[in-house]
Amino acid sequence: MTSAPEPALILCAHGTRDPHGQEVIKAVAQAARAALGVDVRLAYVDVQEPTIADVVAGVARSGEVPRAVVVPFLLAGGYHVHVDIAEATADRPDVAVSTPMGPDPRLTAILLDRIAQAGVAPGTALVMSPAGSSDARSARDSERVLHDLDRQWDGPVRIGYASGIEPTVAQAVAASREAGAERVAVASYLLAPGVFQRSLSRAGADLVTAPLAPDERIVEIIAERYRDAGGA
Image (cartoon, rainbow, N blue to C red):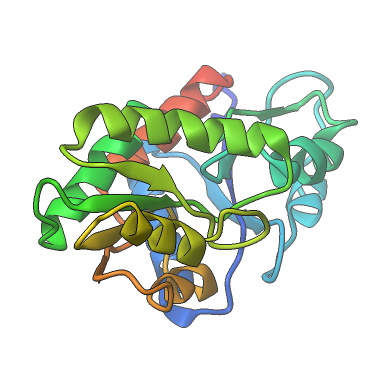
């Protein structure tokens, strides 16, 4: 008697029109497939297809036996997690949903590595830049990472959002200079290249760090989220 296959991993990203960003997301999915040895399917909540609703609908129903685990490839628990993904899985007890990627101390560690790789000197004022969301739950998740970063960085740290809400990245950079900072660096709290990442370079900072992915710790978090939600 053969055992049932392990639940598929549905890696649900935001989506981007940027070809480089698309390739980064695909590479992360491939790395997760290699690490877990399970079927990995990509889904999106915006911009790209297939949508999360379509991918979930394509999973054969099996009562309450887990057939798939959705891992939100998102850094905070905002609208896309609590509405888009929740609605797509609402009537599917056989499709589990994990917590999003962040907050997680490994993400802070990657942020610090990206800061070092960009040549940001200790003491430089930092602006941590998430995508931004009007959902207060998303802001709280981002602020937890901000506080973690602030504890570990030798210099002033503030937040500036790439989209949606204030303070914007440009406002946060300006506020840092008004507070006396001679040099300001933007620490990208984004997963992949795209329109938000490009917008950071127009905020008036001296340096901008690269996005978080690809990184082996990203794959570790995905694997952990998958297993904690009922995967292999």
